[in-house]
Image (cartoon, rainbow, N blue to C red):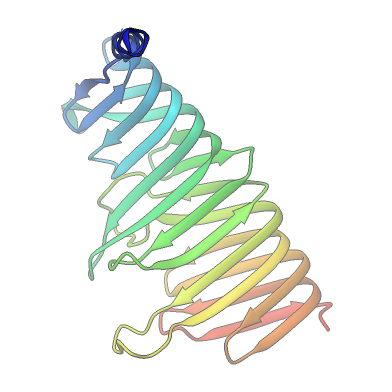
Length: 253
């Protein structure tokens, strides 16, 4: 009994409480261990253990086990800071949310390591390891799920832009599985339309009037009302906002 009590005391003493850095207005970083370097307009943080970085202006949250974060001063708001670059390892989850006319749409990106690069016109998430990308509608329903051996996602740079989708473009390489679900906003009982694909390489783009998906290498497509298509070397799928699907393939059976 005494040994058990001693062990519990030792364990409690070894627990390191998480600490939160407020880098500037709208940017916070939480971790169990951290190191900070600050210059006039830049802040560099080295974060270890239970890392969570949140940027309100960018609609961005990044979770990981370890992270090196570079933050820069927002040129439009002197007291605010934005995530400039981040290199994260461990269980990495990147969350991006965007307001839309019907509510909040979001994207979730997951993998073992990632590099985040913020730009004026777009932000990039690179994963050289197996990558999973999901998009959700304003009701939290999954509308898109893609997985591959590696990938790159292009996101909107800020929280408020003229674009309603958090995800602009997704590129997946190697053993790609890509599923899409279209929900009818006018019907609560109607089953959603589904699209399932596999390929060696995929490029998905959110365009003005819908989505364009380009698949190459060992393409297999299964879609409601279309049946199955196997063996194509290339396929282009266009889905408009009304849910209409158009295919263009080469080499299929």
